[in-house]
Image (cartoon, helix red, strand yellow):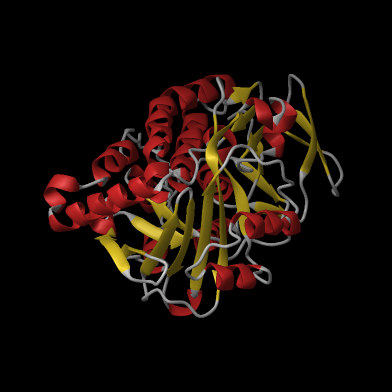
Length: 401
């Protein structure tokens, strides 16, 4: 088999998932990650549709299910915490089908890392700084380690992918801002019942708390509508200043959340954006997950796309006996429509989560009330479930745990 030495940049979800499948198919993957250790904490992510089949074929479904947080619903409240509308997750996104899962991103990352730690080389605390491809492979330079050669390089390093920037060009060419920004961070005492989410909206803004149960505690979420805001995605102090300015004067629990934000060790902030490229590969370099086709948090499908993309990419490399030219083309052919449908979900997500005006907030609440009373008529999940299953997974074989 050709091209067995593969460098994967990124160790969140797509990277370890790809390493798992490559190893199962006889490749020799190495994963490099900027963070000093596997990322912990994070926010709740969904594993839906065929992505559940992927984790099952990886042999980690039991661990993912055991680590699930099983959120049960959302209550929309006014500034005095009085309920305005309520809906279960079953009626909202179809998770009541008994298969789809919700888990903290850090927990999923840890499960995937642990499943690959014995057979995959992980290099933490380093990052790719240069790529020099030739006919035989790619010479990779790193921030700290000495240069190394690999047959193939895969960018699994997220929305702000360094591999994509080096191989395809500046992020601004491919990132499509969807008119919102979002922040998530851990908080202490909270109002939300266990496994439930409380959401308060004012026009163009969202503040919420979800309690995932057990030792995981609660997470706050702040979101707001805006055009592009220039910020350094590695400068949390600057990002917190933006949030304080945007949410100044908003009531409910927001003042307390902003206070707790200052000391949150797991603070996350970013624009709500998608990534669109005409091609996900260039020569011996390819992209998977958010690096190539981020659907944005508004879709709720980023993790599922990452898992399925990793499975298909590794499988096509196996079928092509390591020939990257054949494998990368087949990977894109199989994934394109699935990605398109899942990115499309985000178009309606903002109107549900962050309505632009008071009338739209009122209308959203009425829709949620209707869906709770007549779930068979009002289920939102139809489009999500169709997109989550919009690909047929080949059985690529490979060694299973």
